[in-house]
Length: 283
Image (cartoon, rainbow, N blue to C red):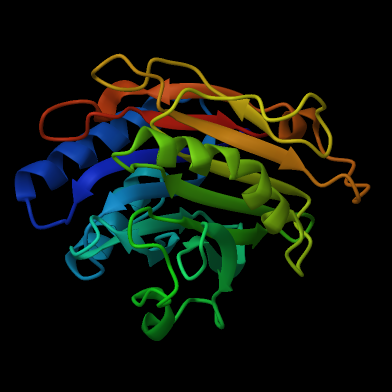
């Protein structure tokens, strides 16, 4: 059955604005119904979330509609702190929804380390699944205050494990955005080296820099999958990266290895977001 991953930059979403909530509900319903019959959105990541209180409850309902699930059978949804909106402001979060029969078996963050003289990456895995608030709502002290990090889940359907992460590269400094882009390949390698050994790692997000092909081979290298423009201003800022673990004889369908990007423009608008939803067909 065709499977999609989806990223939506929610542009400062808190879940407290009824008009905006209703607009996103309509948009996500339109995205779901625009897919060909039998196609499913199995993982959805929402960046630009501003709280862990009202937003997750609304996103749970939005994800249920987006994934064509009954209200009594919602997807798993994790909301995890990923950084600060500015150096002194409140935290920013990423929410990830996973549709059954896929089951989350791990979650974590990859963050920029601000404790040294230059930014490096460090892995902050969740001690439990589902993540407990004592981990999900609190950033490590060494996390860089100026750039949100990546939040990921590792999921399984009983046959294969996949890592799916989301990132909002939204620094106001072009040089910082460029440095984060250069670290995407390292993030993918960190996901691929997770103890659960995912067969394929995906990163979707709003990168706010043009996509770059990181390497030149399909297996064991990171590729950007993009179609655009993705913003109301005409920029191609939202896309996906994919890397296949070269050490696993996965024998996967071709669609896993050569995914197909597409856009869901229904979420564009003044009461929604200035970024389109970016989908990636993986099966």
